[in-house]
Image: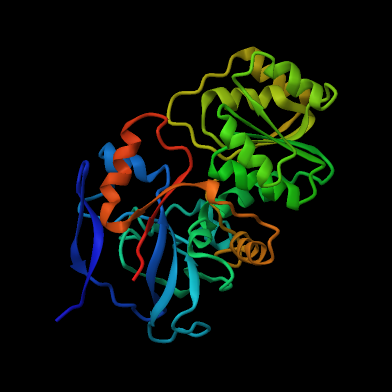
Length: 353
């Protein structure tokens, strides 16, 4: 007789039920994780509230941490009780992109928490290579932030911006705040964060940003221009996925700047010929960034996140978390997203003994 566990199971559009379901068993090469904290990602919201799931029923959740509860056959390098964060991508390993180590670009992948059951549950079984160990000094809340941190770092690495530059981060959400931190760690001269909420700008400075600018300030453009003496920013990161901030990035960029789009827009974005001419005249480089993986899998993004959380270079603050809900109240957490602007930061689903 199979063992059971509790999980938040998405049974249909806006039908998220906390119910008993089958507890997974780790197969050969897998580990079983007792989930302690799991973040609600922006991509989870349309899956729960707007019929965006690939299938029903499904257990969502892909930003998570916990403890090793069991080892599948052949697994080495782990012990029961190890603290781990989970890398959700399961690349095919065979396609041209995977063979080049560009796992984020795999077209034949699976993904924990969207294409197969994920972490909004007491347990999740994942390949051992997807489990990233972290030090006991790092909290489970921090462990659930590995995925957004690695998304930020992947963009910073792809942008190949040399140190000593003025850096602008458009968007003070979770990924934006980690992007600002990674830019500082990699030698930025000054880092500014741009948002429309003063509390996010204050948090950005608390986490190490040199300055924060509110885009709703009537004098915003003048203040930002003055910050670099009119030269613009040598690196610009767009992390909000907003048409307004995507266009803003073009304006903020200095001549020959490195511009990276990390955010994903959900509405049409239109660039006028004048805006595009801005790119040509400044000769700035524009690069997109997708997910957070490199070779050897899952990549240096995950190794560095674990190391920098442990040694304190990567900072964590309770202000990154808007609210914590017990796993049993998962629907209550998602209901908050029905009110636009009500959620300011990450919501974590936690399950403690």
